[in-house]
View 1 (cartoon, one colour):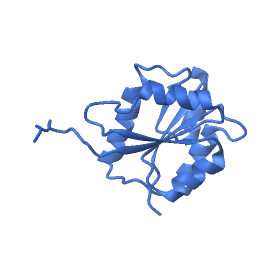
View 2: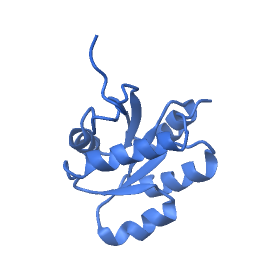
View 3: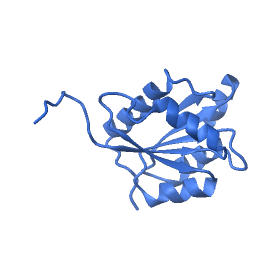
View 4: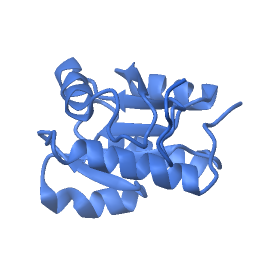
Length: 146
């Protein structure tokens, strides 16, 4: 039997990544990887190409974190972040991709928990994702289940 490190979780986390552009979804997955930190369980990725898919997937339950593209068309990730915050009491953690730093005020309006700049930095993204998943778990939030 292997030795377990204190604080290391093998519990998988489900991360939804939304963008109308497949290359953006791939860039996020590649930058974050399958295990963003040693103490954060392996990630299961769920990709969504439309805002309706995001809402349906979150409503279906089991999502720990949503990474939403603020530049997606026709429904932007900032609007989806706001909608999920308003409509889902036990919502997953929310992160929005922003293309310009001045758009941080929009992320604040959307009530997202964090932002990532696009193009996604592979040194920053895993840390942001791990921090969000840790905070989500510390608040005792479970994945949404309907």
